[in-house]
Image (cartoon, rainbow, N blue to C red; front, top):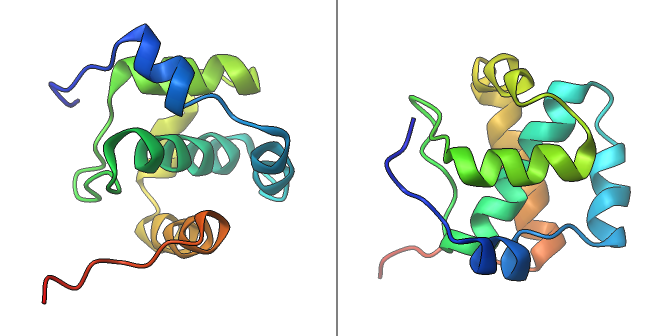
Length: 106
């Protein structure tokens, strides 16, 4: 669990999923993958970085906001957090979806 919190204003401004997001999320077959993908997508938009992977960084307010939009129980994130390769695959898809590149620090 992260100590970070996001205000309702930030959540509604940056973590509200649009129709293009929903189409991409629905390509993930299982609920835990849909929730995890959407959570990471919203996390990038609101924090300008991906969540930490090990252990998987969970911001409760963000998780709840995303889960409500998808009508998926927040507990599904526990299954998602166990699959590091899936998390990494989703990060690559999110970068492409948002037309972003990773900062190399150079």
